[in-house]
Image (cartoon, rainbow, N blue to C red; front, side):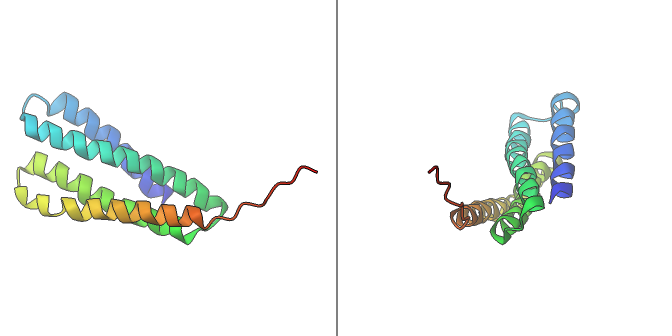
Length: 126
């Protein structure tokens, strides 16, 4: 999970730099907006993947693991579809966007379930 998060973080920076410096003059408004949307969701979920990866190093929580898997799939499908639409100008990739968004939603639900199942020891100050 941490490896995927590292690779995803690298591409966030690379796509952001390429999009704002090299491609900005040749992309129209919609294409630039699609890249921004893809980057926004990829960045946020990459950060969460890094946190989940760090948690999973300490304790294996299957709900968090599967949440991270769904976040990874969501990044590939949701953000990837926006990048493909912007750079390849093929609207067919728009069909993948809601599938990726649904993967994000499933990932968040799994995180909530995992968090509610954590057991914290009661600390007593007597």
